[in-house]
Length: 359
Picture: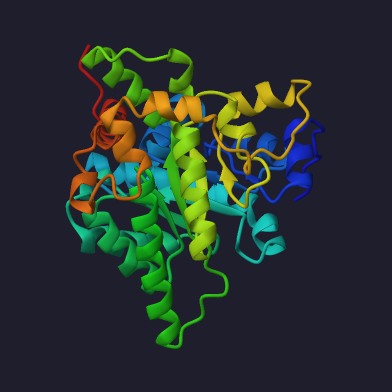
């Protein structure tokens, strides 16, 4: 497969820096265009899957009905997740050339474990192993909670490349990287190959910003509003310093894009940046010239202002939260509930197709 490259700041940055671009969608049309921008990866989660299926009823309605007809005893959830698997396999195929070029470090399609399993480490790890078998270039998302950390280490030991998700903070990122290190070391010590494993640890920078903006409004905290778009960037850069100092084998991934800072400020770092396709179009149609920014600290004034918010300190300081607190952090609760809600929406979509309302 050959996709013509599209000149612009995105492609220029991918050629200039080790920073790589992944598409925050498994929509095939968007992914093809993202690859032309230099994209070498993509992601899927319950929200993305539901959005993609809803956006293309001319493709997915018939396919879902066919899945249901071929599996008459399956639940709505089983039918919907079968569609997610098929979507993931098709998107992964587009990324195989990059997977081969990078020897597995890029060219991966992220598939998220069922959020309804978030309380069960064994179920998460078992599903990660099953998803890993869908295609040779799959990477599997597991949430950065105490239960998720257990599953991350187990699945890594079992040979699954993990993309840590539902992660918003320095303590979550570091704890997840340490769990991956334990899993990789155990696997190598047992004599198994880890040469093509390529884990990443996501910080959902925009969702941290979203949560802190909510907290400021809720608690009446007086603060320079300009600083609130820098919280996720500051946490990401702080985590990157720690990852580099400690030689973690996983890379950081920036997700939940809200503004162009969450792309431009990370250029030059050995990281993944995963903006939604609409933001890729905005950046690539601009006259911006990419420059190295990862080594440039966030303005101390912004950090000083942000430290007025207790939840910023929890997210920014390495010891700001213990693993047992990750699940109750506001951004975690919001995101997990959104993912659970998207699962319910997908169930409803399937229900409307296989058991349409009476007229």
